[in-house]
Image (cartoon, helix red, strand yellow):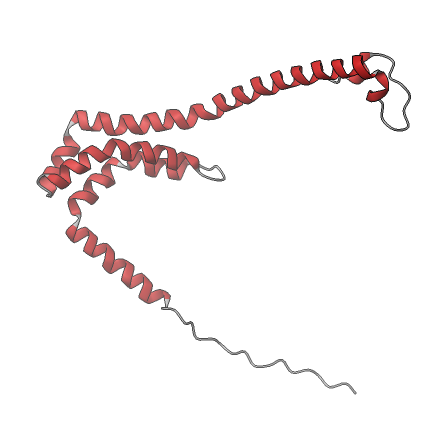
Length: 174
């Protein structure tokens, strides 16, 4: 009679790093410190970077270029006002004054909309460019093929086991 193999006991390893609970507590504490010390900056960025957050949520592409494109231009629109906040009175009323200025909102959200425009238009422009260059390349290759056939004869165009082609339509494929 064969003996049954008894599996070895399960040994749980102690993790070398901090537990998830301590990491979460550390993140919450860092967030509270940031809110306490950087409230005007966080207030300005939270409101001004809304188009970036929307782009990150809406973009379902594999590499999510929408958030990066909109975010970069959105931050470029926010940067002058962020510098104004940091170099001036760095307090909540000044941040609210910046946010409530219509011209500021036009600049910030206009930069973000330019990011959306760039993100939306780029695939069409690149596709048109690739289409034009490939069409030109095909025409150049066909011209070179005709030159080779004229110089070397139709035997160069035949594959192994085939006879000579009857006309040029078999040689040049569309």
